[in-house]
Amino acid sequence: MRRFAKEILAAAVLTAGLAGCASPAASSSEPVDPVQEKLSQMTLQEKVEQMIILSIRNWNEAPFTVLDETVGEYLKAHLFGGFIAFRENITGNDQIADLLEDMQETVTGAGGIPLVTAIDQEGGTVWRMSHGVSGPGNMPLGATGDPENAREMAALTARELRAAGFNTDFAPVLDVNSNPSNPIIGVRSFSDDVNTVIDFGRAFLAGLQSERIIGSLKHFPGHGDTDVDSHTGLPKLDLTYEELMTRELIPFAACIEAGAEMIMTAHIQYPAIETASYTSILDGTEVFLPATLSHEILTGILREKMGFQGVICTDSMLMDSVAKHFDPKDSARLTILAGADIILMPVLIESPEDLDVMTKYIDDIIAMVNDGTIPESRIDESVMRILNMKQKAGILRRTYDADLRRSLHEGTIGIGSAEHLEQERRIGDKAVTVLENNDILPIPAGAYTNILMVGMRNDHPAALNYGIKRLREEGLIPEGVNTESISLNYGDGKEACIAALEGKDLLIITTNMYSVSQLDLAASESMGGTERVISAAKEAEIPVVLISSGQPYDSVLFPDADAVLCVYDPVGMTNVAEDGSPAGAYGTMIPCALDVIFGHAPALGKLPLSLPEVEDGVFTGEIRYPRGSGITDLSSD
Image (cartoon, rainbow, N blue to C red; front, top):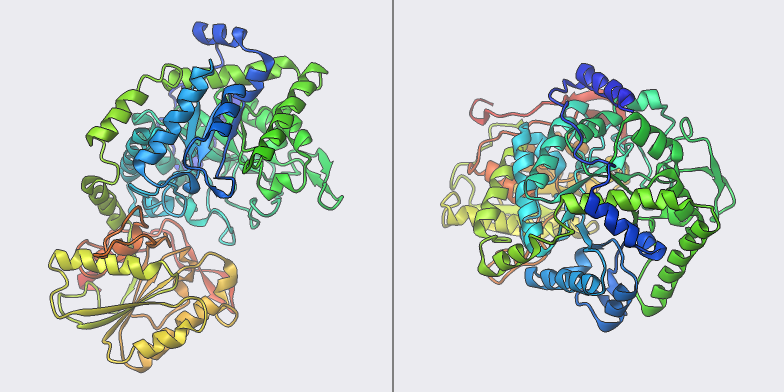
C-alpha cells in the first residue's frame, strides 16, 4: 500500500529537496478496543450522524451566537460528529467558548460523542476569530524564508483556538500556487515552489499538533493550478496522476508521513483520472465527478497509492461546484462510496424548516444503507477512523476542555494578549518584502512632515493609522509629523485622494489585487485609480511608497513608485477603539509594512514566488522578479 506513496516521496526528494519524511503516519485504521466497543454500540443513525459536520451561521435571520432551545433539542436527537464555526458565530472569546461548551454538553448529555469543533483559521485572508491573533497568512510566512515562523505562528494560533473550545483547524493549505490566474488560492498558498510548500506545510502542521489541535491538509489533490473558484464554479484540470505526482501530491505525501490526521478534498474535476460523469441538475450537461466524489481519487490515489489511513473530510458541500450540479442525495452517496469519512456542511441551516431538510438528508443516507446502495461496512470504516482520531486528540475524554476553559478565565492563555500580538507582529515584520527602493527606505524620523496615506480598501486607512500610532508611541515618528488617511474606495474616490495631495510631502499607497482582471489598468477602476493618484503625486514631485497588499503580481504595474513593498495580506482593520487601537482582531501585514518603511524592523522578506511581467493587462511569460527577490540591505540601495 505504501509503494506509490514512496514513489511520490522519492519524487519529492529529487524535485523539492525533501528529507526526514520516514516517520510512520500518526493515524491508523487498526481498531483500538474502546473505540471498537463504542462503534458496536452505535445505531446506524448515530453512525451516519457521526459522519456529518454541520454549520449554522445564521439562525432566524440573526447570527447564531447562542445555543437556543430549538437547536439544542435537535442536537440531542441528532448526535452529529462536529460543528464548524464561522465569523458570524463569534463575537468574543467568552461568547464562543460558551457556545461551543453548551453544544458539547448538549451532545454528551444526550449520550453522544464529543464534537469535532472546527474552524478555518489559516491566517491572512482566512480567519474567523473576532479577537486574538489573525496570523499573517501562508504566503507571508513563506516570504520569511524560515519554516520555524510557520510552526511558531501555528502553535500560537492553536493555543488561542484551544482556549476558545476548538479542537480542529482546517489548515494548512498545501496547494502549490502554480497558476498566477488562480482566483481562490493565491496568497493562501505558501509558495509556487513545491519545496517551500513542503517545508512550511509540515512546520505549520507540527505547530498545530504541538498544542493538540487537529490539522486538516487542504485541498486534495491540489487547487493551486485552477483558474476557477470552486465556491462559484466547477473547476477542471487536465492533469494525469503522473503529473500530479511531480508537484501537487508531493506536499500531501510529505505531511502524511509527518503524521497528518485529516485531509480535506477539493471540488475539482480531473477527467484524466476520474472518467465517470454525472448529468448536471443545473443545465443538463455532463460533468466529471470532482475529486470529492471520486473513488479513483479518494480511494485509488489517497488511500491505496499514498497509504493515508486518517480521516478524509469533504470541502463544504454547499459550494456551488457541488450544490448546483449534484442532487444532495446523489452527492452524499457518491462521496461516501468514494471514500470520504466526514461530510462537511451538507445542508444550509438557517431556520427550523432547514432542520427538517437535514433530517431528510440523514434519512436518505440511512435508506441507501438499508437497501444496499451503500454498504454498512463502508459507514463503519469511516466512523472507526473518526473515533480513532477523536480518541487520539483527547476529544473522546474531553480531558483538556475544562483545563483550557479555566485558563481562559484565569488569563493564563491570553487570547489577543499584548504578548501574543507582539509575537504575531515580530513574525509579520520578517515577511515584508522590498522589491524597489529609490534611496527612500527606511524613512528617517521626521524626514517628511505631511504624509498622505491612501488605502485601496475601505479597511486599509484604519490599519495604516494603527501602524503609525504604534510607531509614534515607539518614537520613530516624532511630534510634528502629520498624517492623513483616505480610502481610494474603488471609484471617484481617486479625485478626493488627488485633492488630498495638496501640501503633502510623501504618499504611502496600498493596492489589493484579487483578480487578474485588475492587471488591465485601463479596465480596472481600483488599479487605474491607483495609477492616477501616483501620477499626480509624481507630477507634484511627491515621493511615493507603494504597498502591494494582496496578490503581489500587481507590483510590476507602477514603475513610478520610489519604493515597492509586498505584504501578501490585504486585510485591514474594521473594529477601531476611540484611541485608534484595534477593537478586535485585524490584518497583521499592513501595519508591518509601516514597521519596515519607518525603520522599526529590517527588510528581511524574500518573494516566495516569481512575478511575471505584465503587458496590456496580461502576463507575458517573462519574469520581472524571480522567486527569492527582495532588497534586504536598504542602506546600500
